Amino acid sequence: MSDKAARTLVTPEGVALNLQLALAGQRLSAFLLDLLFMVGSMIILSIGLLIAAASLGRPEAANIAAALWLLGFFFIRNGYFILAEMGPRAATFGKRIVGLRVVARNGGQLTADAVIARNLLRELEFFLPLSFLAKEAGDNGVASAAWVLGLIWTGIFLFFPLFNRDRLRIGDLLAGTWVIHAPKRQLGLDLLSEPDRPPARFTEAQLAAYGTYELQTLEGVLRAGNPQGLATVAAAIRGKTGIPDDGDDERFLQDYYAALRLRLERHLLLGRRKANKHQPLEGVK
Image (cartoon, helix red, strand yellow):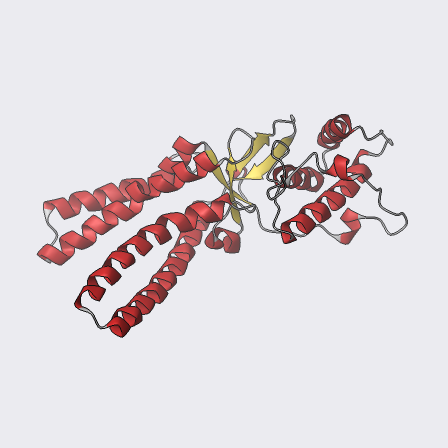
């Protein structure tokens, strides 16, 4: 990665994480992959609606199928991106394949408002002018002035990330987000625990203090291995949970990460999810 793509994100705990912004080619590749997923979904939807309309054999069935198709198309092109980026990986399937994810530029948690804003803007940036272009081409069969204007409109939004240093879409600019290069990597067994010692044990209350967002932040801190960052996060966790200082910040964080991840995964299997330290477990009353 180029140094021009390097950025530093400071978390609310005051930890500086070194990130790499996604390159334009990576973002384009991810978007094209997402379009393939969407086209595949639309093909399945279309076939299903055609079969359903044919099986009913009523004149109004075709109109109902067409209305459902338009509704499904709107949901797929908007809901797909929003729901995927609201997930714990903050990435669509295309982004996951390329190794990208969305983060908040202020270092905090990626909020639902930000995800919705950045993705609804895609309707204005891409899908709306594309639909207009398709309609104009179908009606006139030639490139009218309106068609050319629509093409220019699409091009401005499409190439906007190439003309700002943070490679931001208009949606990113308004939502306060970055798209970063963060390929999925599993923490090695040697990082989670050392073979010559048993891992530390924590109470349910000590682990319940944090959620998925903090787990992801902790993983980034462990990967960076910066002593100051390790000490800052270790002090924050000990202060919040009342865990005594054993003098080994890195080992403490490795053990806490492993225990917290196990707890969150276990609760997720039971249908309960804790997004961050400010929320109770979903499904628990």
